[in-house]
Amino acid sequence: MSQNLNSAVAVIGIDIGKNSFHVVGLDDRGAIVLRQKWSRGQIEARLANMPPCLIGMECPFRKLDPEVLMV
Image (tube, rainbow, N blue to C red; front, side):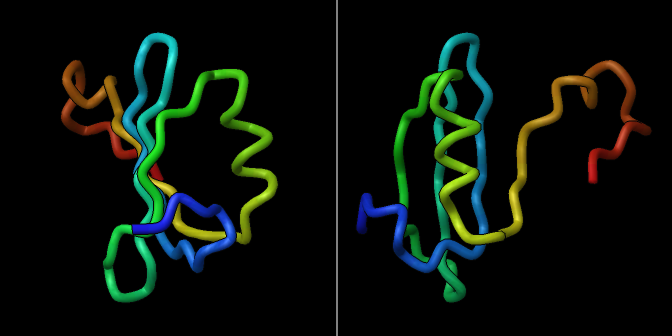
């Protein structure tokens, strides 16, 4: 597994924490190519320096209203 952001990341999953984000990036085959912990201050700059990809995040509102869909 590479920790290099220059790897071909096709999909990113982000687990939102109070002070940090746990980020997992998958390539086109579904293999993990990125697994890091980013601070809130890092997230915007790091994503801005990556090629376009699909990003999935947890949705805390789903617990309150199961009809809410984030796209």
